[in-house]
Amino acid sequence: MDTKKFILTEKEIPTAWYNILAEMKNKPRPMENPQTKQPLKEEDLYPLFSRAAAHQEMNTTDTWIEIPEEVRDMYKIWRPTPLVRAIGLEKALDTPAHIYFKNESVSPVGSHKLNSAIAQAYFCKQEGITNITTETGAGQWGAALSLAAKHFGLELAVYMVKVSYNQKPYRRSIMETYGAEVIASPSMSTRAGKKIITENPNYQGSLGTAISEAVELAMTTPNCKYVLGSVLNHVALHQTVIGLEAEKQMEMAGEYPDIVIGCFGGGSNFSGISFPFLRHNIAGTANTRFIAAEPESCPKLTRGKFCYDFGDEAGYTPLIPMYSLGHNFAPANIHAGGLRYHGAGSVISQLKHDGLIEAVDIPQLETFKAATLFARTEGIIPAPESSHAIASAIRCALQAREEGKKKTILFNLSGHGLIDMSAYDSYLAGDLNNYHVPDTEIDSNTANLESLA
Ligand SMILES: *Cc1c(COP(=O)(O)O)cnc(C)c1O
Image (cartoon, rainbow, N blue to C red):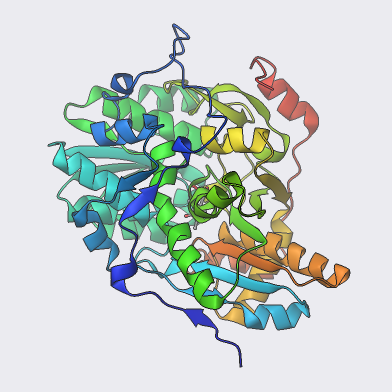
């Protein structure tokens, strides 16, 4: 019988995050001030973010960044997370491939998001900040930050995308249980929200809109900072604990991945599982494939434009060099709420542009079919977001079967789906659809954005 689970001890929780920016040969272009088109400096980010986060965001020189002891201490609640060989899934697929997954669903809030929430809340606390604000899609990030904020004694206001606020009421309950205030977005409480509701009263919200509202609140409230759960470099940095642990665990398993897969919303969990392995590709000592799995209904990496664009709907953020569907792209109301974001982070976008990573877009029904098979063979009901990674891993495993090749596949299980059961209900009742975005919609939505390609 093969070993199924690879477990590290608390002592083996990484002591430093891996900063891929320091090792990239082609670094991403800088963020720009939308008015002056000048490159942004670290100080330009101070009004919005904690200084530590701003510093990490711009750090292109330090490969390793020490994890503060208070943060590591809190990681010990659930880290290190297990690496599991998905033997049941392999058997069901009758594949020669070996499939491993890193199980980030074991965190108290059920996803990888806590890895960065703790770090960012800690930095705010250190700097004497009293209030923080953020957006959340499906509610995973909001839940993680609610717990982290409470732990470090900060007040938190969360703008939750309206479609998820209604689809996933228990995530709101979770945030409120941890002591956060939750507002459905678009809301009438900000200028950005009011404008959108006035123009389109039935708009069900998007991450881009919720970000605008949270940024506006932070900019207009004293001693309040904005905290972001994905897209930016410092968030990806914090998530590298995932891949750093997985690297040791793959070694315990006596294997090295041929393919590493993560689902893709703004890029934080994909970066987290990938970057520590990608560094060996950069060094020329490995030749692993990295696949970002995004929804067919929100295909920024596969079909978006490489350009400078805003991170939010209203255009409050700096211009970010990214693959984008346009900052006012309104994604379909799919159940993978955490993947309904119009753009990709600048590091990921540069890596994709340079051919160091790949991307696939996957129809919603295929992701639920994969999720159901995974639940039945491995026991864990995955988050609809994570199911994109599972579907991509299944595609790779079936290809390995066709080619008769043994491949080692590693994917990140970014979260469990136990609070997403209404989505499974709809799937099982046959009520879900696929959503293909026409080329014309992408073209018209990005027409005003200048290509960087
Ligand atoms: C938020 C979320 C994602 C997508 O965000 P990334 O920053 O791309 O990782 C994926 N899976 C789960 C479970 C999430 O909560």
